[in-house]
Image 1 (cartoon, one colour):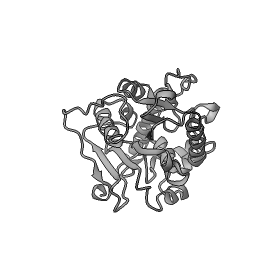
Image 2 (cartoon, helix red, strand yellow):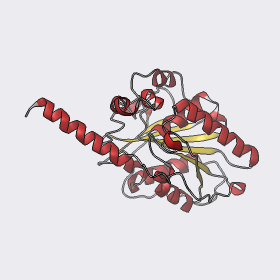
Image 3 (tube, helix red, strand yellow):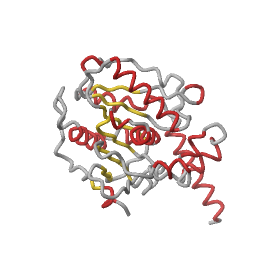
Image 4 (cartoon, one colour):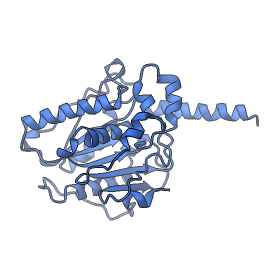
Length: 277
């Protein structure tokens, strides 16, 4: 077959995959506030990815709330004030301001855990590593986050880069990615990257952390086919998140028991250096 035809079909499949991932509902950030921060010993902040809204977090939020966690998310704004297209560093500063104001109003809150999907994981990483978020955060769990950048972003630059600076930041050769990976992650914060080799958006090994000599940094590879968007909904991913939250809050006051399901067997969190290719 003509190689140009093959490339065209490949590009068409990738665009179709991207279209299924983004959330274009203009009401996607209209969420009901259910969290009582006055009694919040295990707060969990959820950060969604590029060109999506808080609605994609509904399944994960429901599961966390059911287990007794104090769950909340932030309206990250973006194109049409909805779709998370702003620069990663700008959004991290927005997170910093929101978190600081929340703890000022509710000083009795427990240490924070952040769960970030895709670009949301980079927002959380920048906040903890560059903006002093390690004073608030105990654990950062990333889902399909391209810590080393993703080649898929080049396609995004060609289509969306004219209005989204963050798309350029997501490329593997970006100055942002290179500078963010300089230096060690704060040792008193647990960092876990959960990823799948079948992720088309954050292609392997872009989500694999490779910081050596850090006992607080881990990689968890998921077995089976787990597409990028389904990292927020698959039961197997939720079981790993449950375990990581239990480990992160092991010495914190417990508001409700956290069940770590014994079956099926869970992937093992490997030190980042050991999991590098």
